[in-house]
Image: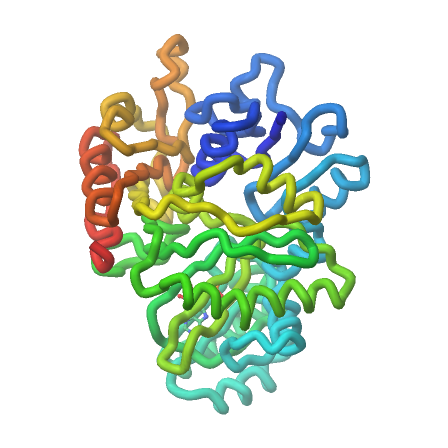
Length: 419
Ligand code: AMP
């Protein structure tokens, strides 16, 4: 099978690596650290918009933006087999107000909320909540559009700043205001084929830049899977009460959802509550759940794309931990252009895979595929696998210890709670 993966980050490197066990894979545009990246092709990257059914057997769309923008629809209209929802299903991630309406329809357990385009009713609703306030942009805001605060004044300011367009442009001109929940967070990844959903794996990520969950939010500084406080029966309950009702509610709206349902939950004292769905694999969660997959990922994703998912997903019972190496200044203003050293040594550590994200080729060393420069905020995701979290974690950190670039930021406590 020939598979085209759309995207350019660590998630796409993980997809390419695991798909590559059984398929021929091209990642477009990819990046110079992902073998088989279209950006390495002297003829230039491959425009996914131009793909036809004769070009490949399957397209896997990595990030949310092209899904929300309808890439999967345009490809399907040309007869291309695609893993990833159309623009209608991608509204789950593209509009939180739409998502919350669907939750209400499907009976998905979630935080009490309402959506607004005017400040007065939004502030009145805030005053019906407890002492933890949450204000979210309706639209995509690069993971930054959520404020969680105990300060009513800050929440009221956010309502005005979001709705005026000052904070997040059009993404914030509609907002969701909701009650704050507490508890550990959990990510459950499922695959859907339009009518059925099967659980893939659970993972937990670390969003803050600093050890002990301090400092600003990031795209994710590390992740681990499995999650000890999320045993299979809890994941089964989440499938029954959240994911399957979501697929049914989508189908009832004539939305043929074929792709990933990434369910972000909070395990509250009153039980699991869904905070959000994303419509693609997480980054860096993909770098821990995909390596654990045993079997033919290309065939599995193709069966979802065909509306013909079979039985369950076979995962390695062991563990995977990924540690992100981020550029200095990340997340506010990452510095780029620093040479990366030690990749070969890191890869030689038992059970380790190094996934490349924000990297560029070093033009001064064109003959060395490992001659890379930092080129983004999150530069590498170093995944260790092993029979248990402690072993996987030890391997990931041993490999991280081999890697160097100036100002590299790494959390030292990834998966510490699970070791
Ligand atoms: P979301 O994009 O909706 O997942 O929100 C991003 C992050 O904000 C989540 O991972 C949580 O850490 C936090 N968050 C979102 N909604 C709530 C809520 N209702 N209560 C507490 N924290 C929340």
